[in-house]
Length: 216
Image (spheres, rainbow, N blue to C red):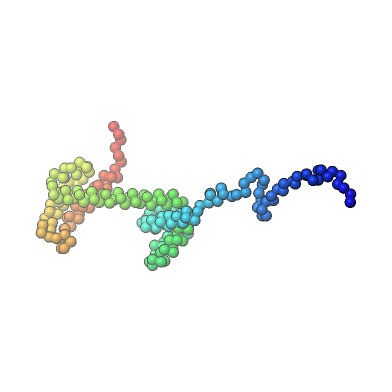
């Protein structure tokens, strides 16, 4: 047996550290993190995706509830418009639920901001109209109850035909149901009462449509 030429080196030679090989199929560079946590965090969770789908469906219901005129003015893909029309024609609860799920999917390719703006505009317009109707009811009752109300109303709506309003108010007083009549049980107002309301409502609408005066 031939002795090793340098036995001291062989005996005390340290073993070289082995480098861990990257996992098969994954390109990992030494000195870099191989995790994809950042990309995973950027992806929305299942809960978030479900919430987005629910929000789009809720928006779809609001869009479908718009009037035909407002709906026709909104720019949207033809497929979405047809799906909304199908939803409006569907009567069964389950059919409407499934159709709205389909509408929600199609809305992902539509301009969501434009659709929300159309719904908000309709909501504001409806609220404004409701306030105007309440105001007209209050003025109608005031004109019937007090002649001095005509002067205040004329200041509010210049150019109003006070002669016609006075005639309608007088006739409404004559046609008023007796005080002992119970509301909802045969107590009905006459035509002058309704005509007075329409005249007041139209005058208030014309006032609201006037441009605001310039500041002094």
